[in-house]
Image (tube, rainbow, N blue to C red; front, side):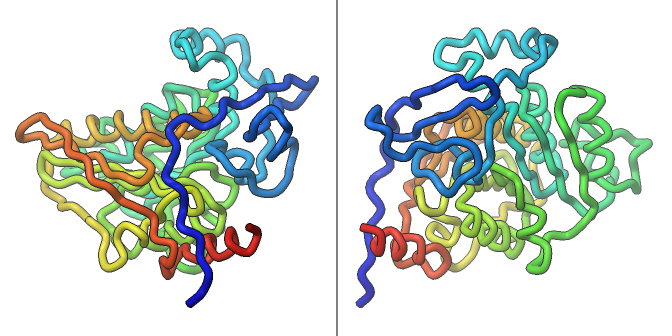
Length: 313
């Protein structure tokens, strides 16, 4: 039997980052004050809830313009958030696969709260039924590519955010290229095969993956983070919950707002609240249900990460 390491329970209170302001680079230490796991500039992978450094991406200090500081001032004034967390969000790039109503809710909230860049991928065209749940689409958009229309509308709302729409289908040949350079992946489509493909990119790049599915008046969210917690295959080894096409128009807005809060936690450098569990909003009763989604150290998709941890131990 191969020697594997069972992942430790997720600790919701990791050591607070120690921040050192250099002239041009904002450096972090993800470890304790003894200097362990110090990351600066471009480098390898770091443990802890800081996705920028796990992706080898440098965060530039003072990259918020005066107009952006004013625009996001209500967030910056929040106790526990501040300028530092806003800088991290500004330094991040998010991939959203799908341009439906749920994707639009994610994108709108991340856009207005100051994410640095959004990449939205969808090959489909706007239909009249899309207008029921997607506030970004208009009747004049019928027949046009969803990703292109989403890009155009988002740029009108916040010009400080880089928005890129791609009219393509995620497949085995392009999934790693599409996810490259991103710090968070979001999957909202009713496409189990595509979800597993995006999970492969999350595993390769050790990125957090926010997965959302909805049906009728119910919607669920979960965060997967290979190496930090479960991957999508750990939780759903046989089939993904794909939801259904039938839904109430307001549901994507509710689910997208909750998911955007989780995304901001991760991008801002805070613990992922939904790592290792799913949260379901039950619209019929206005209640929430939680379900545990533990990591599997012998998972066929991400188990090698625990093998590598064992080899380093």
